[in-house]
Structure formats: structure tokens, C-alpha cells
Image (cartoon, rainbow, N blue to C red):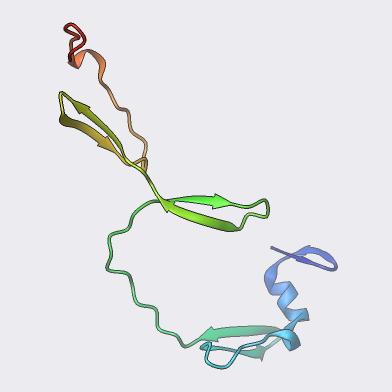
Length: 109
């Protein structure tokens, strides 16, 4: 859905009005042509899949819904007597239970 002078319309409807305005800059790999009562936009750029491990990101949006900042999730690390007990990066739902697994002995776990 996009905003148009006639109101909010589907993108394919609006493109029919704007075929003369489609700009495909040189070197962009984009091209466009009329087909029936619409426009077809194609690209010739190759897109290679990432080989890096996918990691969750924190996203910050502005009032218009545009992403304005990304950052990595921090990690919650719980250590008991200087030894790592559990670590959580916030990327999925989880329940961190400490419960009665530990006993307090004069301020020491």
C-alpha cells in the first residue's frame, strides 16, 4: 500500500499511473518496461547468500516506521561463584530459572 493523490492505493495500481516516471539509473542493474497496463521492473544484479551466521538485531524505528538504527543484542550472563551458569542473548523466549537450585550460606551461593 502506498500514498497517492487519490488516497491510499495498492502499489501495482499506482505504478500504472507512474510508468513514465520510473527511473532506472545507469549502473544500477535495474530496468523497466511496459507490459499490458502496468510496468515490470527487473534487476540484473546477482545476490549471493550470506555465509555468515545469522544473528538477531535490535531495530530502532522513527515515527514513520523507517529503520534508523540497528545494534546487536547484548547478552545476559549469570555467573555463580565466578563460574558461568547461564547466558541469554534475547533472541527467543526463555525462562531463566534459579529457583531453589542454590542455597544462601552467609551471603555466598
